[in-house]
Length: 58
Ligand SMILES: N[C@@H](CCC(=O)N[C@@H](CS)C(=O)NCC(=O)O)C(=O)O
Image 1 (cartoon, rainbow, N blue to C red):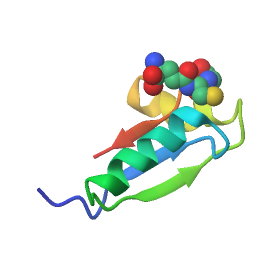
Image 2 (image 1 turned 45 degrees about the horizontal axis):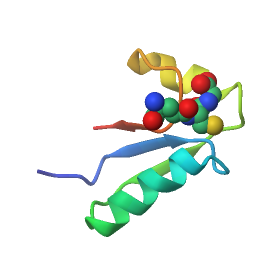
Image 3 (image 1 turned 60 degrees about the horizontal axis):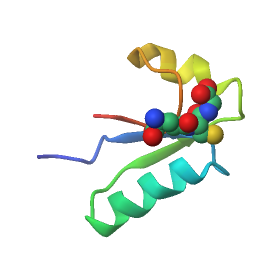
């Protein structure tokens, strides 16, 4: 599977986001992180029917 276009929507200081980064790096899955300021992250996550971060858009 081509993971080149994977986008990880995060709040940078979130430990949930750090755990997702850790897992993706551990599995050598490439992705581009899209960091957001808390509260405004919802504009990014709601496009995927989500609310909290992390969201991995594939
Ligand atoms: N069930 C989710 C919870 C993630 C979660 O609580 N993320 C926090 C990180 S600070 C968050 O996005 N909080 C803000 C919100 O829910 O809009 C998971 O395990 O990934």
